[in-house]
Amino acid sequence: MSITILGIESSCDDTSAAVIENGYLLSNRIANQLVHKEYGGVVPELASRAHQQNVVPVVDAALKDAGKSPASISAIAYTRGPGLMGALLVGSSFAKGLSIALDVPLIDVNHLHAHILSVFIARSDSERHFPAFPFLCLLVSGGHTQLVIMKSHLEMEIIGQTIDDAAGEAFDKCAKVMGLPYPGGPLIDKLAGEGNPKAFAFSKAVVKGLDFSFSGLKTSFLYFLRDRLQDNKEFIHNNRHDLCASIQDAIIESLTQKLVKAAKETGIRDIAIAGGVSANSGLRRAVNKLGERKNWRIFIPAVQYATDNAAMIAVTGYYKYLQGQFSSQHITPAARFDHL
Ligand code: KG4
Ligand code: ZN
Image 1: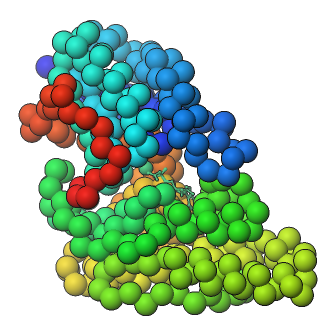
Image 2: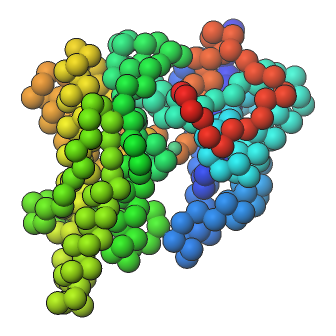
């Protein structure tokens, strides 16, 4: 019998729905919310409203793309958290309602767990190039930066994390300082392509063990720009590419340094990166290069599955379904999770 999972993601500013059948992705629809652009960040109330408008058409489109009727769904997986409470409530209420209407089980999914399992998204056998357990994952998103050992699809151990800002936050905050719109990460990535990564050096934090810190780098970048702007009002404009390339290089170096340390300490050679920042072309290049040098096998989700999407929620739902890990109608969304 086929196992068909409908996944729903609504943790931040993307409303997404996806269908996975027997572990193969059939569809993945994402409605981005452009409404936040002019505010320089995600406005929670606007995000909730946009999710309410988008959730029905997005789910409908994902089912149509997959060629599936609601009656063929085996279970509904949805993002329980972490994320914006109002945004999470829209997805979870919709998922709960639909699970009652269709009389199918509900599966709550941790958004961070799902980012990691995005490396198991495949549309066909030729795409089934999966890591073996245990593998090491560098999870880098807008709100989190963690090093995680995945012991199975559902068991994980966090061995390092940021003590202040997340890597995505560092990208976004540095972009803001340069006057770039939100989210700044993809723009820095684009502008960095034509810049010199060694043009400017910024002081990086030294953090013990496998933890990360990005707030010092952000401050160093801010002070550096403030000083240069005093002499030359056009400094940012005239050096945009080199500034983007240099700050991106500094963030990548902080991330890969700890990744190398973690691989050495654990002896694990199957290495994954996941989360929105894993869409960064410089980070992808750096990790692939390290893989060649250190004889690691590298696993990176396709760019469309690196940033927020429901395919990762559906794939996590699929593995939870196989283990019979269903959730009750009484479970509430969680804006914060202290554990994976
Ligand atoms: O995983 P994600 O889509 O949402 C969260 O769960 O947080 O990650 C969003 C973060 C944002 O900070 C965004 O600027 C960053 O990922 N990001 C990038 C790139 N694409 C997205 N950062 C650097 N380079 C990119 N290409
Ligand atoms: Zn995310």
